[in-house]
Image (tube, rainbow, N blue to C red; front, side):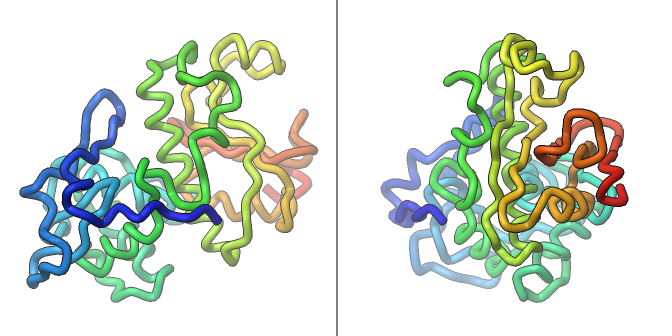
Length: 259
């Protein structure tokens, strides 16, 4: 596990921002209470990545909700994925409830201080989850360019993929998950013989090594954590890794694993 940078000083927070999908999500002074300040409606910890203020519940909307959806994207329920759209609807409430239950919090589907403080423990200053990095999700180039979407969108999609993997990792006993690759430009995809419509070129996908879990256990677990594409042992070209991805549609095929 990587060490989390200590970013809980308000002076550091003022400049903290996340470039995501062409927008900038920043933790502004109005959104970040001073360290130690608490109230029924405010989180008492400032975070170097993003700080929530107040409580989010069904019916809430906006950037704070979108940021929350990214972090709970790995808890949509079996076979589902939640939209990262800034609208706190029933699917987001259900995902928040599952996240809370997974970490022993009061599972009411309302995101308040306890939920946000748990998220702060799970994320690094660049908003990636503590057990995954952008470098793991991009072994193709340094700037996320050349795919089927803009570089910013590919990087944003990879961030969601990492949070899904973080949820899956926790559900599998917090054992490390080996990521062998993720985003590919069109040229990188062609060089490795990837499918013409590969979700790798959108930043949605990751190829996983067996690790201590084994390919089939990974493929089976992925069904519960927002992955709409799962390819593993028994599917042509996938006996040596498990492929997981988000995106539209659903295609699961790992015949040797009962999928």
